[in-house]
Length: 92
Ligand SMILES: [Zn+2]
Figure 1 (cartoon, rainbow, N blue to C red):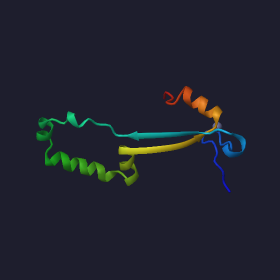
Figure 2: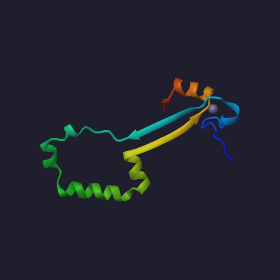
Figure 3: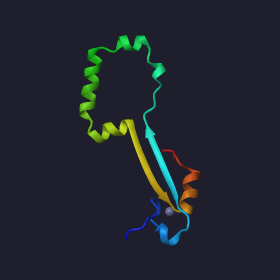
Figure 4: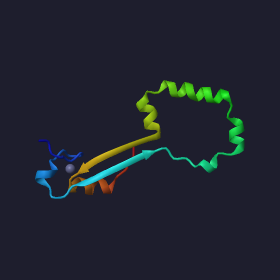
């Protein structure tokens, strides 16, 4: 039987640790519908729609999905949780 392991250091969590932490990250496209004005709608013409469609056709199904919504689930041991909380978004 395969137990749960820390997604950062791969340590087994069920045997070695009493506590484990779950990280749930959701990355989704954000937009404000109020920002779409009548002028924007006038500007959108069949030409720009077909350009958009051509753009979408170049993407794989996964790539198109990733542009809108992506979720990650991780299990962390206590030491890795501490390290993660110190820097959840490392700079590039
Ligand atoms: Zn760990």
